[in-house]
Amino acid sequence: MNIHKIAQYLNDLADESVTGHSFDCQPIAGEVDVLQISIVGREELPIFVSVTDDQILCITYLWGESEIVSDKRAEMMETMLEMNMPMPLSSFAKIDDKYAVFGALAISSSLAEIEHELAVLSDNAIDVIDDFSEYLV
Amino acid sequence: MSIFKKIMTAIRGGVTEAGEAIVDANSTRIFEQEIRDAENHLTKAKRDLTDVMAKQMQASREVERIQREIATNEGYASQALEKGDEALALEVAEKVASLETELSAQQAALENFTASVARLKELIKKSERQVADYKRQLSVVKTTDSVHKATAAITDNFVSGNSKLLNAKESLERIKAKQQNFDDRLKASEQLEAESGDASLEAKLKAAGIGDQASSANSVLDRIKAKQK
Image (cartoon, each protein chain N blue to C red):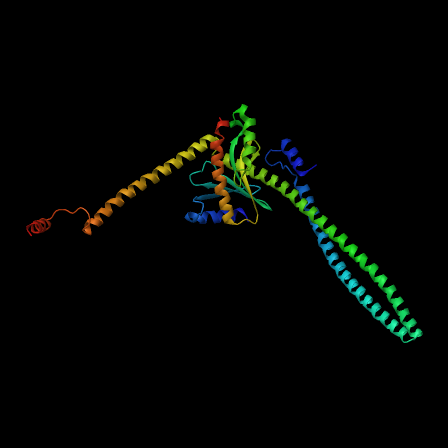
């Protein structure tokens, strides 16, 4: 599996998608190949996909450290831990000073599974921002 | 120190400048080489195991054969004794004695092989666990490295692309607004569809002569005729 295969699949999907979403893929050049995936209507929350030797990582950034209401930070963290397991397929993460939700798939996953993962991740991200807005400025 | 602790230390240590690797590539390569070596040893150990198991089977067959031969010869010896031929019985007994020596040698060999098989199997299991653990650790290292580099690429892309990551709440509001807009349009088009659908149905009914009919001179005349009867 590599990001080009994923991009090809998602671009070819068009209206055939079983998740009801349309995907727009844009590879980002760098030391590690990253695929930026925008779901139509949700361009503000792109998903970044990278492929390593044994897993496929799908990441959506949520908010930065600066967006958190400072005296609610600890409470937010606790809520994140509590929410981590009920949230289907995705987990919370922190990358540098940004919080994120991500899903990791085995490298042997099918393209349909990846599509499903992306749709769920996007839904999760939107729900999380909605539900966590009390902690955000 | 576990691999997670190492990674945590590296991240906390502020090794987050773009281009500065959290895990140095050289030690990753060394680690990969160690995994390959361990896998080679494993392959060799498995080959050895096959050899030893073959020898074990041979020895076990040999033990059975000698045991059978001893039993047969003991039968011969007692038959000779029954016939009163002590000399022949002694000759057979000597053969049995030499067979027993052979048997104990084969049994010792068999025990040896059995012990080797058990040891090799244990060794293989241990190596397999080790290789799996090394691979898991390498995966942690590589994932950390990959995410680090991916983040750098994403950040660069956003900076150069002149677009910025929006504030989370703003993003959500925009997405919701778009969704609302889409829903509204969908609703509107459904309504439109329903209205035009009704209209066309009425037209069809009328054409088929069902439902409200415009009065015609003929129908009025028919009605009057019906009353006269």
